[in-house]
Structure formats: C-alpha cells, structure tokens
Amino acid sequence: MSREALDISHREGHAPHHREHVNELILEQPARFGCQVVEALPAHRAPDLSFTVDTEAQRRAVESWLVACGGASDEVSLASMIAIAGAEVAA
Picture 1: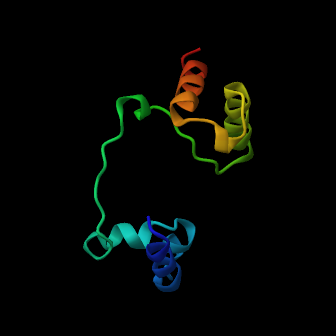
Picture 2 (picture 1 turned 90 degrees about the vertical axis):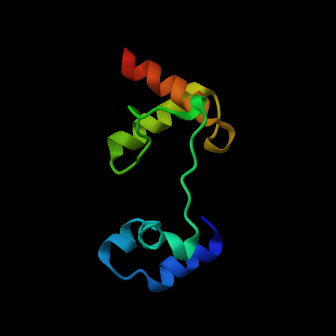
Picture 3 (picture 1 turned 45 degrees about the vertical axis):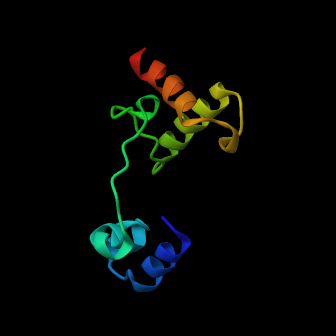
C-alpha cells in the first residue's frame, strides 16, 4: 500500500472496522486504489501459520521466533520465520 492510499484511508475511513485495520477502506474500493492479488513465492506460503499479534501470548510467540531466528525484527526474513514457527507448530 502506498503512503497516499494509507493517508486516504485515514482521512476517509470512519467506520469502526476502518479504524481497526488500516487496509479495510482500501480493500472495499479496489478499483480506486488499483488493488491486485500478488501470489506469494512458495517459500513464503504458510497458510497454517499466523503472525498476527493481538494478545500478549501472541506477542511472546512472535518474539521467541525472532530470537530463534537470531536477529531483530528488521533482520529476519519471512522464510526464516516460517521455518521456525512451522517447526514449533509441528512439534
């Protein structure tokens, strides 16, 4: 999403779900924002995993995966996170 699209979403998205998720207004108006579906690379496909952080337990889980990957959040690849989290889920 572009900064411009996010700015529009912030200015115009007044419904409660627009305030909770910054992309809702954008997704509701795909033609306006030029939305496209981009297929993930095979190494980035993990439909059984979630990296959503809405609870303290989820924060701790993601934090432990980052530590296991050996770096700060800006130094860890998605493929590494999927490998670590996937191994934990499978165990």
